Image 1: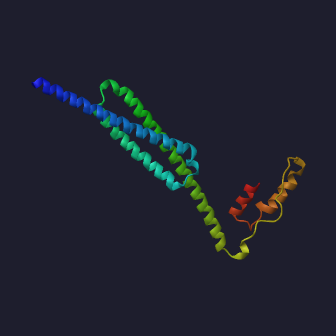
Image 2 (image 1 turned 135 degrees about the vertical axis):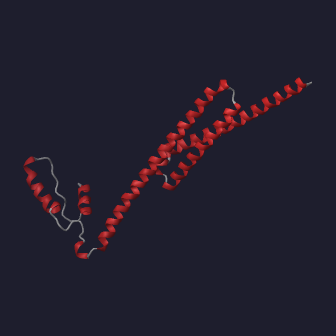
Image 3 (image 1 turned 90 degrees about the horizontal axis):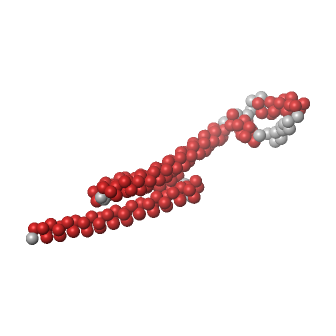
Length: 184
């Protein structure tokens, strides 16, 4: 009779492991779907997304990475040794996808930070101009900027006019000179 009880216990354990394996497979499928969704977001919408949304997605990636580690540990408790190499390959691919998403989101966040810094610098320069006396603030010249058309004989005229309007103009500040250079 003891053998029948042991057999019944093994069958129950086998069913429990099969059910647990099925549950783990569903969770893995859910994570794969989330990864696919994040990949399509990164590909299609992330470049126009707000910084806060990108940070939220990055946090989600970190949470998923932690959950994937827990899933991997649970799989090791249930899966047979023969199935481990295939399972590890699948989980490593998913982790690689998460890593690529993470890097893409971090890159976009860095671009947002750079843009924010540039806007801040421009705003600071403009506000500094607003604090200076009215006489030192000048409007950009109404004179059209000199153009050089590649004729070497006209180079000296172009250079002289450019220097007198821009380079040697003490009334222009660095920001205004940079703006003029951009217009060229």
